[in-house]
Every structure is written in structure tokens, then in C-alpha cells.
Image (tube, rainbow, N blue to C red; front, top):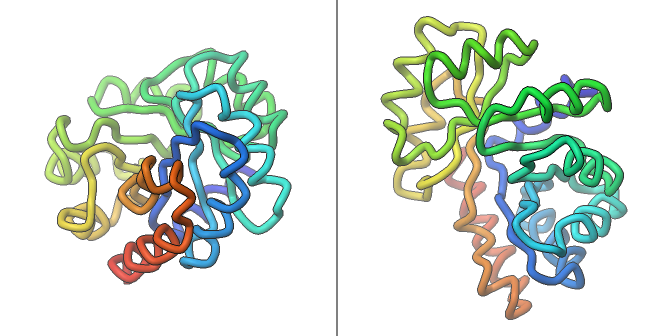
Amino acid sequence: MTVDTLAALSEARLVPVVVLDDAAHADALAGALVAGGLPVAEVTFRTAAAADSIRAMADRGDILVGAGTVLTAAQVDQAVAAGASYVVSPGLSRAVVERCHELGVLALPGAVTATEIQAALELGLTTVKFFPAGTSGGAPAIAALAAPFGQVSFVPTGGIGPKNLQDYLSIPAVAAVGGSWMVPRDRVAAGDFAGITQLTADAVALTR
């Protein structure tokens, strides 16, 4: 299951990082991402609407939904109960990773140093979120870390946009890139899903 999830993320190349303030927008937002050619989303647990939003998206059956900003094992339980297929954390938490293993979902914890990556390996992981990418050395740092950690793949997130996307995607060790520029919070709140579909299609074109 987790292997399939990672393969799907790698195929998508881009993971939209979504902040939803109202779960009523979740279904339409998922539809906009699918229509734009990107059937994947990471819904962050930064708002009270997160679990209901994940449920609404997962129930569609045409989009791979994960939970982001997951800080505790209890949040892992909430996310997976709502239908999340993967769990993303800003840092490396043994409790979160072990709970993901128990539930059979992919864990993508944040790791930006050699020490953190080794700790992730010791927990049985081979893919980490590189966050915050922009302020942690960016693409050159990932390229440098990939040399000693040849078996590790990275999902950089934070400070990535159309202008520097290819800097990251050109690194063989980068499985996918997380970004929010195709799902601006104000456009979601305004219900501009046609605009989000266009931004998503433009983003997908940049990965080709």
C-alpha cells in the first residue's frame, strides 16, 4: 500500500499543499485539481476543517489524498480515519512514524540534516520531506545529501514555485515536489475553481 502511494506521488511529480478553511470547498477543489491533471493533494491539519475536507476528497475516489502538518499520533488516527493515504509532518517524530507503520500508511516526515535522515532510515523510511526547502539550502543541499544517502528520495516543500521548480525536479533523488502556488488560499475561499484548474494545468505543464 505505501509503495503504491509513493509510486503515485512520484508519478504526479507535484503535490499541491492545500489549506482549507471550509470543508464545503473540498469536493470542488479536488475536482479542480483532477481537471487540471493533478489527482493528488496534501490537506494540512492547520485548520479545523482538515479531517472533514480529507473525507470529502477521499470519498470521490479519483484523487490521492494525504494529511499534512501532522504532529501527533492522535492526528494520524484522525487523518487515516478520514481517508488519508499518506501522512506528512514538518519534522521527524518517532510516534507519528510508528503509528503510520501500524496503520499501513506512508509517512513523509520532514528531514533536512544528515542526522535527521539517518534517524528516518533507522525508523525504516526511505523517503523524507525536505522542509522548509527554500531556507534549508534548497536544491543544492538535496543534491549534496543525496550523495551519501543514495537510497533516500526527497519531497522538497517550502519556498518552491514555478521559477525554481525545475531546479528540484532535475535532481534524480527528488521523488516529487510540494507546493501551494496552484491552490492559493484566497482563490479557494472565493470559490474560483476554474482559476485553480488553470493554475494546476500550468503547473503540470512545467513538470513535463
